[in-house]
Image (cartoon, rainbow, N blue to C red):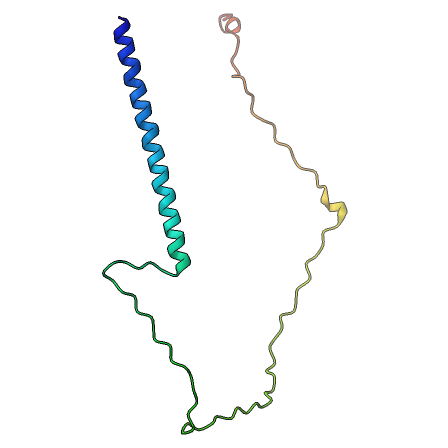
Length: 123
């Protein structure tokens, strides 16, 4: 009988050790994936093997003498009138009207209203 409980104890201990090991491995995998994703975002993207991302070539903007110079002319513009909504005053209630009496409705009885048995048998 002692060997059965000892074997059962080893079986439960093995299941718990497997579970803890699995959770630790999953946690390490998640941390590594997050760190890899953050480093890829910090670099500006992710380079997949076999796929190449092409950036647009940088072309310096130089003005050649054959292009005509553009002059910018700023003129005064008349302001356009915009209709402004007029706020409507909200009437303030009187302080005396603040406490109006509230009609209280009676609550229904919580116990059943039943006639006593003695009064029913008195016919």
